[in-house]
Image 1 (cartoon, one colour):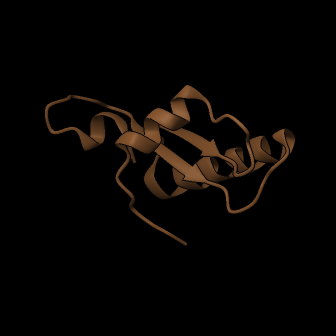
Image 2 (cartoon, helix red, strand yellow):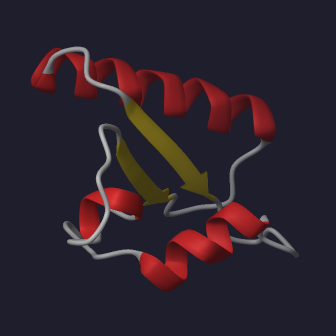
Length: 79
């Protein structure tokens, strides 16, 4: 988890999550899995504003958003 939910001085309404894939994923598979993951979160938590960023190993240059999330994230679960 990263963003305003992990900053006591910030007010935020959405939940920002960084999920690291366990294996390299092709873009279409990454999008499909992300959609399924978010759908399951909605079932569990209700329709809250949830932003999910997926990092896939083997990407030569992670996006700025992924790098920023890694720096500010608090790990909740490791599977």
